[in-house]
Image 1 (cartoon, rainbow, N blue to C red):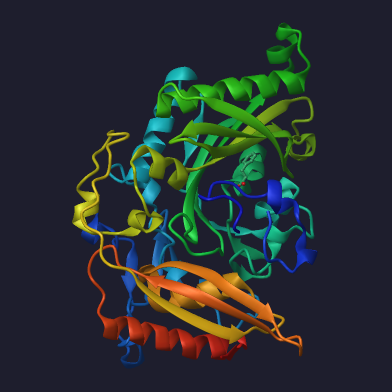
Image 2 (image 1 turned 30 degrees about the vertical axis):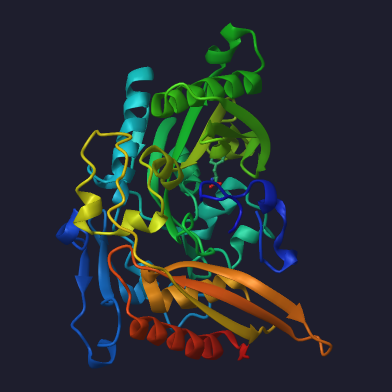
Length: 430
Ligand code: PHE
């Protein structure tokens, strides 16, 4: 989903475009990195792989086997090995990782301003039902976020959550009324320095009772909206100091009214979160028809890139000590010192696309081959000939954040990309 320059929210603005538009656009570690992963024995045919295939992961004490998530037997399944291996990594639960440091700083804000009344969940499984991810939060049946092009499906009724809002309804049903849910979320997306198919969100939710707003003399929705804004403005100041901020009206299926908070940072307005007053139907479904609530969802990578000066989203996934050793528990806002910049290598590829071609599918093929060695993929030229055939030319930027790549290695990657796009995407190379 190419909606914002850094991933944080979905469903707003451009995301209102529905499926009919062909689903194109819309809306430490070292060893502990792999502590939760169990590697399968090296099979001969895997020898050439850049990364070992992970055969099982541990999510909150539950072992999930690869065969249950990466499935050849289900035509709906579109989860590649590279994504499966990220399940259970839980960067947000590492106190010395920028994502974990940021989560803790937000926790501190809520603990001290709401006397620990917000319950915290950061270990809920990212494998959820389509009901949890979409239906429970009123995402329309034809919303583009439901497409196979945008979301990772395990089977037709199970997905890797694409937002932490997937847990709102179940927590409400279980009787929780003020909570923060942090977790890894998954979206098929473009490739550049601010987009990665896995990132982290924190969801906040707060239910009010009639006593709360009656006293204020305000109508319940206005009361909740004002409380929400006050809470989030305080959070932004807690994280960024005294910054200029502004509220922008927007749309989410699960809130009304809905807003985005933007802060002025480095001479630009930056969208940091989506939020709003929860749709009454959601509360009603959990037996809370006499209440009102607010919710927000913020993208942790986006905030962390700004707070820690991290220039590329792939850094969050590196186990290179030159990165990991720069951050310490509780040290919010330490500025990352780039250790070196290795040269990029550009390769172009042109092909005639087919009707079913999508850029997200192409990105997935390239990531499957080059992993984190691909820095960016951009469409640099396209045209349609007289016969109605459309050609796309993409520039792929290969660059490692850890070392120089050799010509041979890059040529090898590019030739694999050429082979696989033909096989998997039904395109004709030019
Ligand atoms: N779930 C939304 C997203 O990912 C963010 C959000 C959460 C917006 C809660 C409003 C309320 O884009």
